[in-house]
Length: 489
Image 1 (cartoon, rainbow, N blue to C red):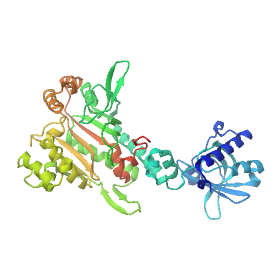
Image 2 (tube, rainbow, N blue to C red):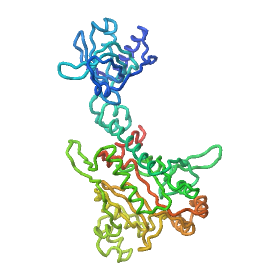
Image 3 (cartoon, rainbow, N blue to C red):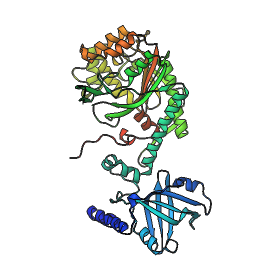
Image 4 (spheres, helix red, strand yellow):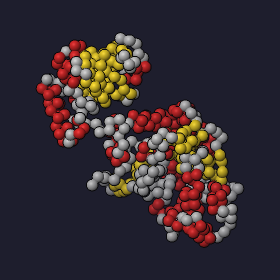
């Protein structure tokens, strides 16, 4: 078998076959071929004897002497091709028999059904379109080495049709997000990825340098502040789907480069955003998956978790959830007692840094003990005002803001809030967040607010986490085509 030989020897064999093709006047890399349809379409529109032309990669071959079967796979799926020596002729059949797994070819022929009932193409002619100089993965039908899967995603896509389907569905999810928002009158816009001041979130940015201007810029950590400038300018419903960059750790839920949706609606609030988020996710699930009940399965195919997206979704206050795990009197005791309980009673010492403020201690309790339990769709409302300086303070509880975090599958999918449009209060809260460092303030944004921004609701949605939830994937790396990896040594 080819795969049992050393890789260098296999590559040399394939180079020799390429040289032999060129000696016959055939250069695969100069050839052209126009398919009439996909492999799936050829199978779906089967008519005995109908002429078809398809193209794809050879994923299997079975030599039977004077005839041969191969499988050709394109993005849509696979189809079997039957080649006969008496049809192709000696020279063409010899060329065909020297093709390798991984080679890309175009085939022309007529549809027929084999004795075993499989729809196939009876080959009339073929064109070699690319010679694969490296063999496909040793386990062609199911590449399992995680390191290879992420570093060489193209091999993963070749070998694992289920993985390819995940990314095709991700594309459909993003398309349906756009369809939903466009039908509601939202306008899609683009805002800068390089910013003089990284704002809209508390996160460590990546720094780059602009040679012509002689100054540093930052890759954006959020889309928010430029989209709000558009509300000031008169756009009443805007959204952007784009990349954010945060110079922080890697985990099952985090990648330094990730995709976000942010949407803002003038004259809305956090409650109108709940309706928007619930409607959007339900629309996407029904349109792409044709169901509102999502099953997550383990490697053996056993259902380990079921998520029911049928509305209405649960609404519960942040403080009430914290009380459930930390005690009914959690918010009545002193900050020092809260810290002691978190470290000693709740065993969160490793998650609470020495310099944590009181709200951060409670935040650690929520993040570690509450959020992972929120499997079914839950709107967690009225978060501490220190956590979200860009939101309006709640009148019923001034220690909180009109905010929700939509949690599904044990992680935050979409935060949203009633936007702060008071420029004086906004400046005070951003100054507090910046710790008195004026250079961290986005003065241009604050000047924009001083021109008057309408009351509004805004929301952000992590596209990668949404895809994880909808497509039953347990790691963010399984829904990002090319996740960040440590460079090879």
